[in-house]
Length: 295
Image 1: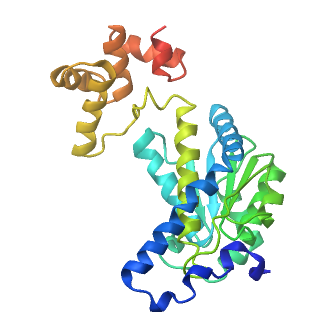
Image 2 (image 1 turned 90 degrees about the vertical axis):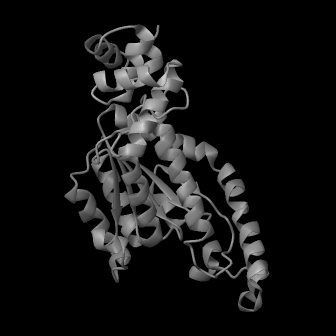
Image 3 (image 1 turned 180 degrees about the horizontal axis):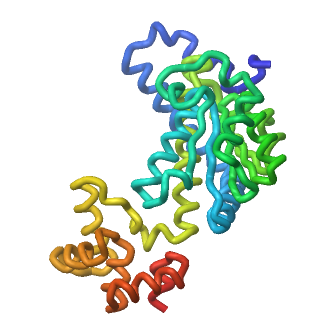
């Protein structure tokens, strides 16, 4: 029942929310938001388990598939989209599915999240395999669309995780690993785009970023597979090369161009004093990890 969910309960601090001054409302909101990292901290073991599963899927050529409805679905789509420029991966490697399809990203599609069958159909449409990892996202933890998808993923043999913002969430029972980040009642009752949404975004940041680290997309703390799709990112790419190799701007620019505007081989060329072909071979032998090419 909804009344038993933490995300649906009324926050005792804000029963007079409509009478607070702007400053008072902001102060309470800020205090409530500060609870989010603490709630996430109690879930780090489960998050670690999910990430290890995702890395395993990537190494087998599988995908990370986020799936949810409403805000939860939008956050999954957002995180998936940002993996492409940040880590230089194809758009098919991290996929975001939202109940109701792409149009639901901008406008709610009535009834879509209540369909158990739709979740299964959306996974079938992208040809889900046993090598993939499916993460179902639902603040309430009870969305039928997510439950249907997780059940189908298990039928296929894919690894599964569930991310919710309530303890003993229904979707947890349908996944291999459950992440339950209970941040308490929202300042605006039931508005899970607030603390719950923030918690989900932070957890998704962890999952995608650390999973990419696990497959060699990072050297030191630098995004060495960044895609230079605009002027800002071209300059960032050169700066990354400079920081990774301690070379000057002119040298970074030279090797950036020699490497076809790919940061990672440019770095390896400089650090190992090799040409592009050799640097590319070294990276292939090292499974894409720059540090391993230096041994």
